[in-house]
Length: 315
Image (cartoon, rainbow, N blue to C red):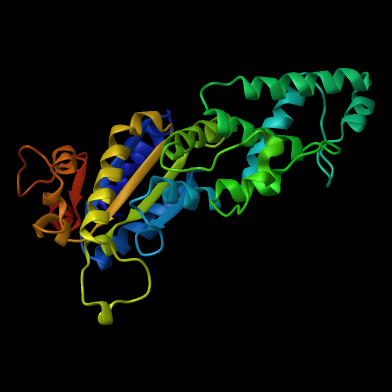
C-alpha cells in the first residue's frame, strides 16, 4: 500500500475524521497515478464504514456547489438513516422494536411492550420534535428528514419520494413538497449548509462520515470543440468558479463532520499558468507549502504530488 494511504488510514480514517474532523486534501498526478490511489482508498473507506461518494468534473458541474450536493444526495440511502433515527427513538424508551415490511407499527409496538398505544405515539411525536429542534442542521434539511422519518412509521402521511427528488435536484414542481413546508429549491445560497447538515445527520445515525473523491482533470483540459469528448468542459469563468468552490470547501471543512475529501488534479494543475491553480491565488495559498524538500515530501501537507511518492517508497 502507498505510504500516503497508510497515513490516511492511520491519521484520518482511524483518528481525526473518525472523531468528527473534516479536511480537504489534493493529490496531483496523471490519471494512471490517481487510479492506483482511488481503488485502494475506496476499500479503506468501506472497511471503516464510511460512505463513499465519487464526483467527476466530466459528469458534474463542479462550479456549482448545489450540483455537488445533488450528486452526493443521489448516493445517500436516506431511508436507512431515517430508519436508524426512528428506531433509536423507540428503543430509548426501553421498548423492544421489530419493524415490519411496512415500517414501524405503533400498534404492534404497544402490544409487544404492554404499554398504551397513546404512550407510544406521544414518544414518537416527542422524538420527531427533537429532530425538528436540532439546530445543528439547517431548517430545510430538518424538514426533509422529518418526511423520511414519517415514512418509516406505518400509517403516517409523508411526501418522502418527492423530498428525495428535491434533495437530488430532480423535482420539477415545488408544490410537491409544500406539504413538508419546503418552499425553496436547493441552490447556491443553501447547498453548503445542506452538505454540512448531511455530515451531521450521518454521524447522528451511526455512520462515521463521508469519504469523497473529486476529480477535476476535465476542468484543466482545453481543446477544439470538434475534438471534445462527451461530458462537461469548463470556460475560463467556470474554471475560476470551480477553484472558488474548492477554496470554500477548504475553509468550511471544519464544519463538515467526519468528512475526508480528496481532490484529484492533473499535472497541468501545477504548471499551466492559464488553467492551473496559478490563476486563482486564494486557492493556491491554501494548498501550497511555503517551503518543501524535493527529496522528502510531507504526506500530511494539503497537497501531495503523486509522482514524488515513488521517492518516499524507495526511501
